[in-house]
Image 1: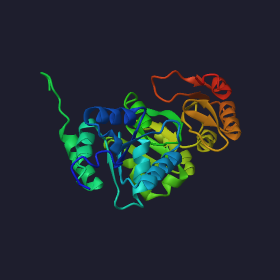
Image 2: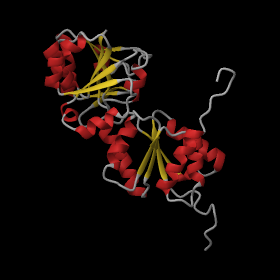
Image 3: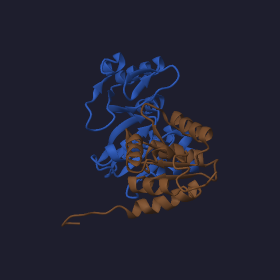
Image 4: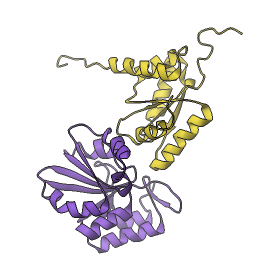
Length: 136
Length: 162
């Protein structure tokens, strides 16, 4: 068997969680652009209490072996739940403030360890923000 | 100004509170009233990291909050008082008197029945909300400022659930 680039293009590597349809929307966009949306597990937490959010995220991490969580907002419930989970999971990483450029970088870094790829993607996502226009 | 909003939200400090209400109300501080969070430095740090640096957060037990509320109401800044459950807000209403209580989010759990998209209540919680009303607090459910407030009667009957 070869280990050609792209062979593991859709192996689960991260959870994406956030408000409303944030996760489904971002993962859908990643899929449309790259065909690699299968690396990401979108999770919506509407109607769940904090404990249930934490249990849901922890359960998916345990079931899939995924050690990366992307969330939308630093103050969001998913981020709070993720930070509690990380307390007992030293090798895992949570990135708050995820955006599309960040996830695109992540899904193409399949040769990297997922937490390392997530940290790299976080920087790419930060650098991808720009203001355009005459007043910018 | 004073405490502008008394909110029950089981997610405590999160996006709807910090951004959704915090920005339009131009909030300077949030009083998070929760006995377990007040006793845990780690939990406090967790919540503090989600709040912009210009916004102060005070972590108080219910007992301490009742004692501090007169001073907080006299504060020249603008604040929100937040509890994670109805029982704690009940103690605040009994101990300090509150004109209006906002039910911002109580999510699904054992023994609870859905009343709104973002409110699930057990029979004992329903009784506590009625008790708040008899103590003079106007109880409404409203997750974000742009949503229409739902009065207590409509909340308890679930007539607004779509």
